Amino acid sequence: MELLRDIVIVLHLVGFALLFGSWAVEALARRIRITSTMHIGLTVALVSGLALAAPWGLDGDLNYMKIGIKLIVLIAIGAVLGIGAARQKREGAVPPALFWSAGLLTLVNATIAVLV
Ligand code: HEM
Image (cartoon, rainbow, N blue to C red; front, side, top):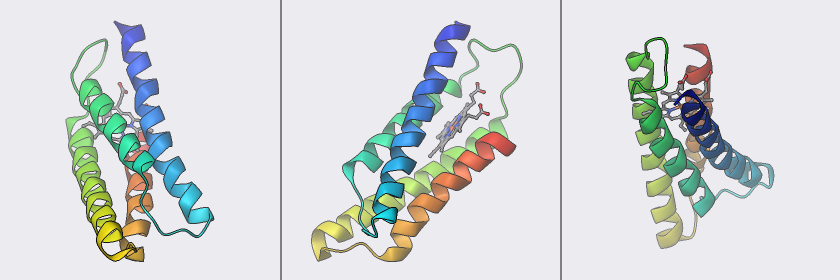
């Protein structure tokens, strides 16, 4: 059970890596756009995060305040990616504020995960 939980944590980190990594690739190439890899990373982080939010394969307690905040931030990232992708399709460009918010909010969630 504990090993399975560790595997889901690795999956959770893969989701984070896909989301932040694909965003960083675009940012470093100065391409302000939303890619499908960002959506995939977000989905993997959400599904694995929800699985980890259930108390199985654990000795101690879960910090539900932290998990709730991370879920709200993830929903905000989803909104930013969704609105950004729609604008990109309709108008051919993503408002830069939406693009930068996606990366910043992802970093905020990783910081909350590690520090809180
Ligand atoms: C972009 C969104 C997210 C990022 C970047 C992220 C990042 C991380 C990271 C880096 C860890 C490992 C921290 C550590 O073990 O010290 C972690 C653990 C965890 N995350 Fe997330 N996370 C995200 C979304 C979520 C969501 C939406 C949920 C639940 C609704 C969630 C639930 C958890 C739980 C329960 C753990 C702890 C695993 C454990 O210690 O057993 N995460 N997250």
